[in-house]
Amino acid sequence: MEWFWLVMGFLIIIVVTYMCITEEADRWAPYYALCLFTFGTYFLRRFMRKRMEKHIAFLEEQQRNGTTTGK
View 1 (cartoon, rainbow, N blue to C red):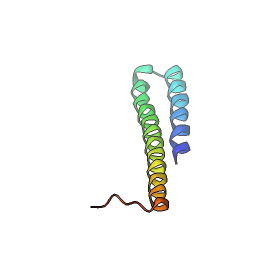
View 2: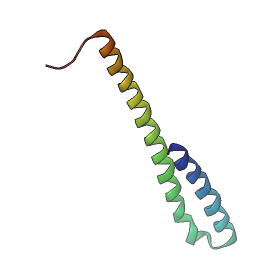
View 3: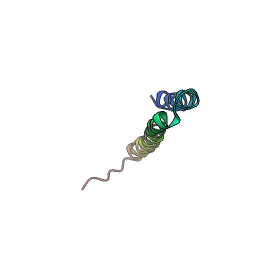
């Protein structure tokens, strides 16, 4: 799903830039905000995936060591 957002970001840049060149730039320039949204979503999902992988590794390490953090 991360690749979807990355590809969509680049696709939006290409399409909006083409439309700005062929038509009125004032009309199409606000659509660059969609590009920022898609790249933001890509980086957020990537950050959360890496964070979850580290957390799962931490939990597995705790299970192997037999330690718990519960009260």
